[in-house]
Image (cartoon, rainbow, N blue to C red):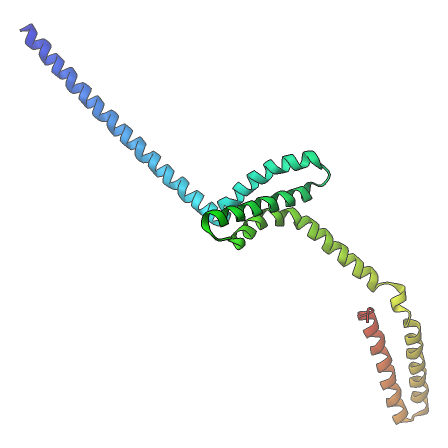
Length: 199
């Protein structure tokens, strides 16, 4: 009897073990599905990210930083120039490798990738250059030598205005209209000179 009882208990324990194993498999399957879903989300996120910024940019940046460390140890004062040299060297190697492996250069792709790194590096310098050009032309526009004709022009306005006043007092209508036209012409010349002093 005890043997049968022990066998029954063994089967019950075995059944409970199988139920526990089944639940463990279900938990593992759920975990695997969650992991698969997380992997798909990560792939989707990376696909979106690398559709905006190509993967080649990061590879080029990593290799450029390694080459930049070497170049900066040689010449530490020209960091931006060293970055440009390292990018151009790596782009040349990349095009050479493309030619060897794929029998084509893919120049536009290489330039596009290099632009992702070089444009931000030089954007500040372009801003400084634009500011310098603006200041140069502003200074040149307001230079006194450019406006040296203004006293002569104001003298012409004064003369035209004097003629206008004299003709107004005399009552000669034709001379009055002519003096108004002369005054208007002199004022327009002055306005034009003030608006465009470089001409």
